[in-house]
Image 1 (tube, one colour):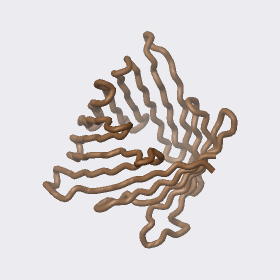
Image 2 (tube, helix red, strand yellow):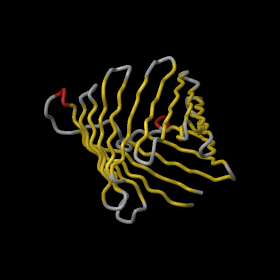
Image 3 (cartoon, one colour):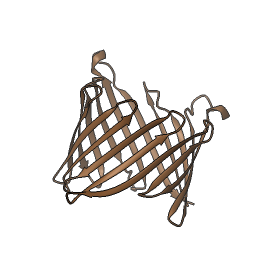
Length: 217
C-alpha cells in the first residue's frame, strides 16, 4: 500500500492546501482514494474537504468518482503504431460538466515528439512539439489554435534528475521559472514557482511551493 501527502502554499497566490492520497494494488488494477482541503490557514472545516475514489489499470483506463459532487470521470488510454512510430492516445470524459477531450502523442524518435489535444464541444485545440537535446535540455513550443497564441518553455535537467524550467505564455503574458527538486534524500518531490504577469508591469513575482512525501504503509 502506497501513500503520499502534498502541501501547496505561497505568497501572492491562491494555490494553497493539503492533498492526501492512498493507493492499494490489487492484481492488475489499483484502488485509490484522495482527500483535499483548499486551505490550512485559519483552520479548514468539513465543508472544505473533498473526497475522490479511483480505479486504475495502468496504461489502460482510470475511473475517478468525485464523492461530494457525484461526478464520474472516465479516462481510456491506448497505444498504436503509425508508420512504425508509437502513437499514444488518451480519451477523457467528465459526466457532470459533459466535457470530452482527446489527447495524442506521436513519438518520432528518442529526442522528438509531437502531441496534440482537442476538446469536443469547446473547440479547444493545442499542438506541442518537444525536442530533447543531449538528454538534458528540452525545448517545447506549444500553439493554441483557439486563442491563436504560443506558449514556450525550456527546461534543463541538473544534478541527479532535478529540473529547472522557464516558460512564457503569450496569451496571458505570464513569465515563470520553476524548480523541481527531489530533496536531499531523493525521497520526496518539491516544486517552487516564481511567476509574473508582464501585462501588469514589473511587480513582485508570485511565489508558490508544493511538496510531496511518499511512503509505504
